[in-house]
Amino acid sequence: MNNKNELLSVGEMAKLTGVSIRALHYYERKNILKPAYTDPDTGYRYYSYNQSNFIPMIMNCVDFDIPLKNFAGVIESDDMTAFKNFLEQSIETLEKKSKLLKLAIGGLGKALQKIEIGEQYELGQIYQRKFEGKTYYAKLYGQTIKERYPTSVVLEMAHELFGKSINHVADIDNLDDIIPVADVGNLCKYSTEAINYYGFGETPANFVHENCINIPAGSYFFRHDVTSQIENARENFKEQLKGRDTFTVIETEELFLSKTKASQTVFELRLVVL
Image 1: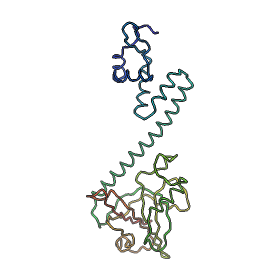
Image 2: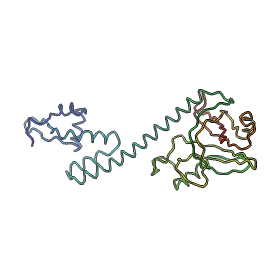
Image 3: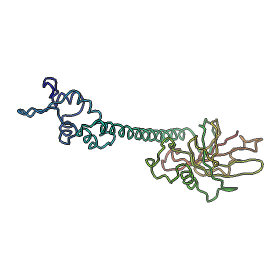
Image 4: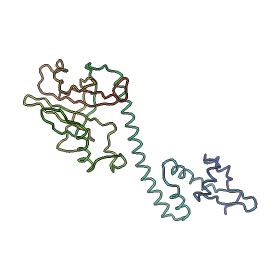
């Protein structure tokens, strides 16, 4: 035992680490962190200063759902190899949770950004704003998009990109390949030779596939509507398309652009002239 005068009472340990006395008693009962010394006459418990270093680790276990029994096991074994393995596994778990947290924040931020965009513009009017570069996995429909659904393209894309259908983000090994609130919709390429419609889903920029279409960043004309306008694109953008026969229109289906209803789908039609 260390010199008793160098030990910390339960109250002092609580003040030093910021955890409650009740929590310290709980850690003792569960063999998570036992006092360094218990006075046989008074029953008072005392901790060494060095034991305070374990408290942040315990709190990390609590905050990030790492089983406390795993921590208790390595402390009880007092085996350095086991403790090293515990730390390595915990770091790996926290790194994945950190990526998931960033992904969640990104998704919420994108939804908020779309709401703010929707507040600025009126339905059926043409505006212009800057768009980020995009990479789309696209499936050719042909001369029409009737009875075609982008959902099927997204599922096909998921199979191509991840080798399986995606049911939950935690199933994905490479979280860097996930795009919060990805674009989904239809695309039409106009040329002097043909008009071709595609369904698409957004992919990471580094995803390479013969079905991918890259849309560069730029300032593009667009409009919002409560019904699809992609088949009327030439008429809708007739002023912007004077003298042009080659262009692309992209129509996304958005949940967050309505001014009044969170469940209202709004179609954003973008004109891309390269």
